Image (cartoon, rainbow, N blue to C red; front, side, top):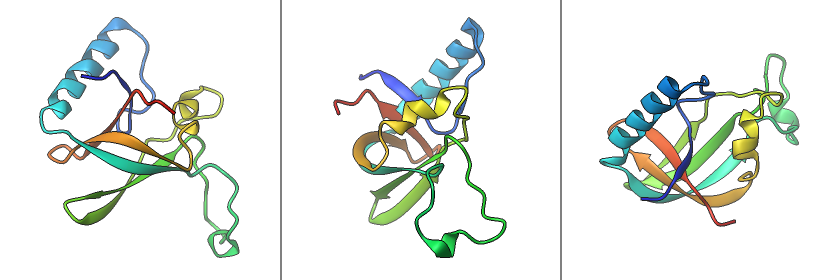
Length: 119
């Protein structure tokens, strides 16, 4: 098994051994039915270029990304939990912006895991 470097749903983790152990236990459950897929990663905190999206009330969430992928013939889009540019959480995903990467998707739990990539 490859090292999982990030997950979409767990967001910013609390420090400490207990939190890390809980995180690892959740990942082990998700890996039981995970399938390897390709996904395009898009950062949502970058400036928008389309004027139609710059409507009043439209808000950018710092450090948040979307994974766009296909599973069983269906196009899916899943968003990560937001981070902040100050905490560095967004930097986990920033290097994948506008790239196609390998993900592990657990359809039972609707969770995305990102294994270590060679970019």
